[in-house]
Image (cartoon, rainbow, N blue to C red; front, top):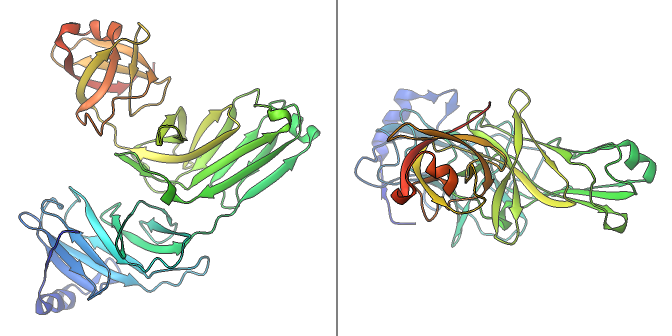
Amino acid sequence: MPSKKQITPLFLTIFLMLFFGRINNVNANILSFVDTSKTEQLVSLGENQASLHFFAGSLSQPSRVAFWIDQTILTTEKQLSPIYAWQILDADIVDKVFLEIPFDFVVNDWQVVYSPDGENFLPTTYEINKQSVIIPLPAKNGKIYITSLVLSEVKINLDNATVKKGYPVKTPDGFFNFYILPDALQQSAEITIKPLNLAGFNINPGLKLISPIYYFYIDAADGEFPQKDLPIDIKYFGDNVNVKDIYYWDNINMTWLPSPSITRYNEGVVRTLTHQREMILAVFSKEIMEKGIASWYRYKGGDFAASPDYAKGTKLKVTNLANHKSVIVAVNDYGPDRSVHPERIIDLDRVAFAKIADPSAGVIVVSVEENYY
């Protein structure tokens, strides 16, 4: 971490705490005034204690920042750190703000979990820096701590009769529901479902993990694959605004790829279908680009496109903002790579591109929206 300037002299901290007292019904250990318009700043709970790192331009405007240790005692799992809580009261996060937690790493199986309200904690992303854990703040308020990782594996053996009539398989936490449809398998099978440690996976830029990561495996007799697409429901937590999809882990390219999904917002559930015997799945949310650069490439020779935002099979309306011509395309490929071309919103098949612009232009500025008709 780059060096930061410790802000808020002691007398100002005490003055602010006396003046503002309780912030949203929480007693703040530290209440600081943070202005990131020009400099990087730091809010710390003390020497060798957790701290919040604000980079220049991190906040939309100067803001009061409350930072404290939550005294709630959780009895369901083993805490490896205090529960750290924060509130950014007067601004939005424009760029990344980091929470740094000193940690000795003497325990192998651990994870960082986050909750906006202290009710339901889910794994969140982090980095390791020497003897600290560095966590990008997921939101302007919330709670984070380090906990031991308890993997609760589910194994169910289904005989021939049960397989033929169908059977629902659920995890104890209720987050993962998998349905063996009638006659999808013809022989007995062992079903395995277990949550996985986030530490073993990279998170694609722009994605936010909003569910546990699950591994499932159908060990059917003679290596039989399901003869029907089987529904998988995964519950998500938090984000009920951005687009959500179930993603599967591509072990060859070491990345997450979207699976065609339907979100039931009133239930907090995302569903996908699969005929695979073995997959690693999780729900991610993503803020979808609405405008950007479109290029073209030769692929299937039709009204198709590659998209990093939408699952294969999704219909999209792409509009050339220079001449307002539009084309409806079906997503049949993944790309462009935003880590290489952050401004690219979509790659059109040459046939589709030619309907809204001259291919000799190479790239054009477009808007992209999902087409439901």
